[in-house]
Length: 237
Image (cartoon, rainbow, N blue to C red; front, side):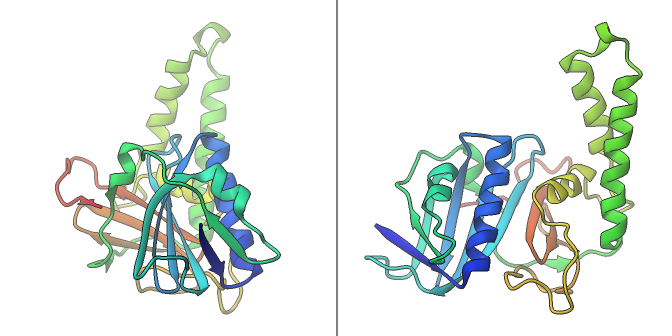
């Protein structure tokens, strides 16, 4: 049994909230865990958004019971959530599962550089709100017999595949960050769990590495491949 000792109750609560949000979109969701020393990265893929979501978690001490250097395993998100003890700030790693295809294809760990042009937090949140409002308006304008799943999906693709200014970041990545609780205001010093590529700790930032774009916030990150890049530059773990 592998026990993770999280840094504090807040880290445990944030991990549980992240897992709960993933399970909201996929009750059979799996997550890939990668840990080294006192840093844990939790990767998930909410199917509605077609992005990779990454939550960085601080550990109070390295995990234990037979693991010498690193932890890298894909597990059930539901089983991991059930094992989180917020009061004790611990989580028990469930048994490994056969990972979905995305779990073998992760963004690179390094080489990230800052990309210009990302609007501030309030503007990103407004962008998502405008997209949601447009989706509702356009679907309500359809006659009842025209409100098919294909029609709704077509409207959704039109809205969420747009890019944020000239950044190349699809709006669906921002929508995913908002839905997963990553686009929250921070205090003067930011949340305790902030981690990720170098950048302003108090707000969102956009980074690139190879074919990947990463929207990083103090609460988590969303990564997506640039459109039209195929499979080049993917890290297979």
